[in-house]
Length: 286
Length: 181
Image (cartoon, helix red, strand yellow):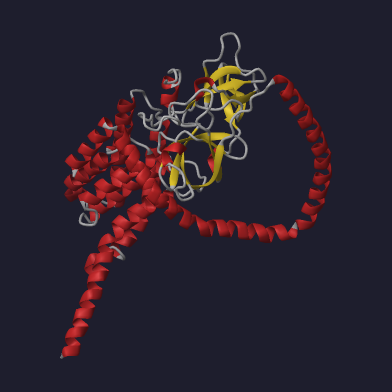
């Protein structure tokens, strides 16, 4: 058995796809099992929520009415701004960005390792080519949570932005000063490689940048914070410790700059996001 | 006469089923435990619990009921651990098998010892294997991985062994006892 295990380890080292395929297979079996187990928990959580909600419904109603009134005012503002925006775009010959397809997926298991931060999501039965999902951007309601690194027919594994192998090009602040956000295995990813003489400002908004083509520009990621002088970190907007639902945005193939992971299904697929940083500058084929 | 034979055959079948379920109990408990640890409970440190739980299972059952976890089961569990936890595939399969081998070698000396000594021995072995996993993984990824999770795992191993051992001992005397079937 020891020899067998050593052999497996060697094969795993020699052929990077071997463990990927095996892992996707195991994940496909585990995802439905986890979904089945999670169903009663969800029902219990929602059930108690409903009972508790009965008691403060009156207060909620009043609050919602007030909110609705103020939102109606904002709606008017938004419509005016939209009209203005359309007019301005028309005069600029603005080319709209391609809209991504997205799937909403349940987080069914928290399958990180000691040195890996990842979650397993269950996908609806395969209507797409699984490899098309690899590279999809995963967001929870508030911000970017990670990226799909492996996808089977029923499940996908999302590598979180806190993982040590995660490197994401970001833009800081209103003018999008470039930097790299690197996962550290801890709760808050670190910022690296900002422009000399322009250290990130405490409280600045961190958005994804399209540098390298792995991410579309402008997705919200987090806020700059200094834990120690000279060591800025990003406080992620996504609630990474308690992910329940993720939206997986798979961007279409006609993105201006292509990501080597997501959009070259036949080519050697880099299994982890750290490859992105290395291969991202590779010029587009053909 | 005929009825007596039929009854014996029936008890034989049920007894064999009982024995089989008892034989599968430790392996089932190990895999089920790993499954439960993966549930999205939003508790910190569950990733660290996973290898520690596997080490504790292999240690206990190899020590007190070596037939309960055959090497094949241990190797497959190791593979599962690697696939689920994103460690280099085969790493934990090798480590758990080596752990099983070393516990088998120490068995005659360890079994008669009292609980505290077994506990200390377990913590020591867990520390050794967690460190080995850290070293191999660092070598394979060509950078020094943070040590904090390793320390957390060792402390966890020492802390949860008495609780796990309590459960294991009950299983050892009850649902896993093949001789009671």
